[in-house]
Length: 316
Image 1 (cartoon, helix red, strand yellow):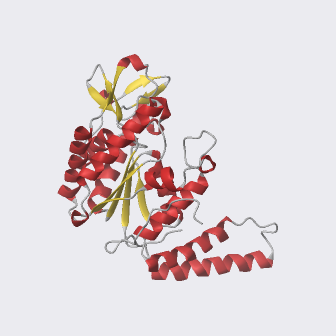
Image 2 (cartoon, helix red, strand yellow):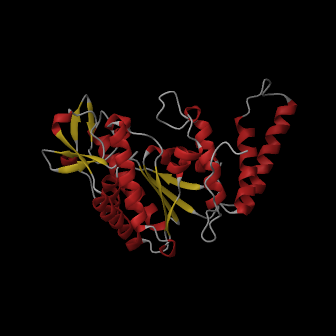
Image 3 (cartoon, helix red, strand yellow):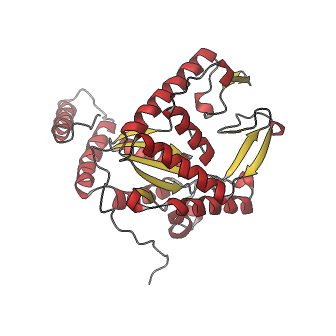
C-alpha cells in the first residue's frame, strides 16, 4: 500500500550535466541549496553573483546589466543603517565602505558577464511574484535593505508581465549564448510574510508564466522542485523550525530527483568517488601525526590525483 504520491521522472535524454559542464545559478534561496550540492560534488558552478534574487524582474535586470557590462558608480548606492547598499543587489554585498561595495558590484558584473557567455546550463529559480517599486526612482528593487516600507509600492506581477519578463531573460541569454540550456524552477520556500493566500497567488502566477515559455526543443526546461515539496513531501517534518524552508532531508530528496533527471549515469559514478574523497577530507583524526593517519592522507591524495586525471575540471 502506497501512503504518498510520487511524481514520475525520466532522465533527460540530451545535454545532461557532467564534469565538462559550466553552470550558472540565479534566483531565490533554493538556488543556494542546489548550488551547495553542485559545489560539494565539484561541478564548475557560479551562483548568484549579486546575491539571492527573489523575483523575476531582478534577474532580468542583472542579466541586462551584465551583458551590457554596466559600470556601477556612486549614484547607484545609498547609505542606510551604517552600511552602503545597492537596490540592485542582495544585502550580502552591502558594506561599510563605499569603495569596497563599488568594487564588489563591478567585479560581480564582470563575473556574471563571463559566466552567461560560457555556461552550458543556467538554473533559474523564481521565488515570488511580489515586487517592490521604489517610489522616488520608480524602479523595481531586488532588495529593500530594510528601508522603511513607505518608500515603496508593493505590487503583484501579473502572469502576462512575468511571461514577458521570462521571455526577455531568455532572449538576453540566447543573444550571447545560443547553445545554453536553461532550467527553470519555482522555489518551494513559502513567503508567508506576504500572506497565506497571497503566497499561493504569487506561486501560481510564476508557475503559469513559466509554462508559457517552456519548450524542450529550444532547450528551455522546467524542474518541479516546488511540486515535489508540495506533493511528495507534504509533511511538516520536511521543514525547518520556521515551517517555511525545506530542511536538509527535503533538500537531499529534491537533489536526488534532480540528479536522476539531469546528471548523466557516468557522472553519477564519478560523484560517488568525489563524495568518498570529500568525506575523507572532512575526517577529523584523534591522532593526526600517527602513521595510520598519514597513510590515510596519502591514500586520499592518490584518489584525488587519479580522479583529476579522468576529470581535469574537478578541483579540490
